[in-house]
Image (cartoon, rainbow, N blue to C red):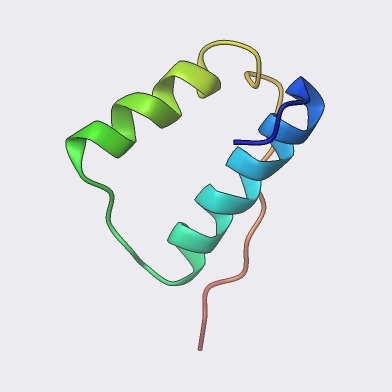
Length: 53
């Protein structure tokens, strides 16, 4: 995880975008980690993605 809080939110947003784009799943541990950011410092982060062909 990047040290800067702003970079962390961008990283998490891009990670989620990639997971959604590629229709990848996340295990319970990963979901819990992402939830911490989504409900905390990155709650205003918007995730945009285009599904892969």
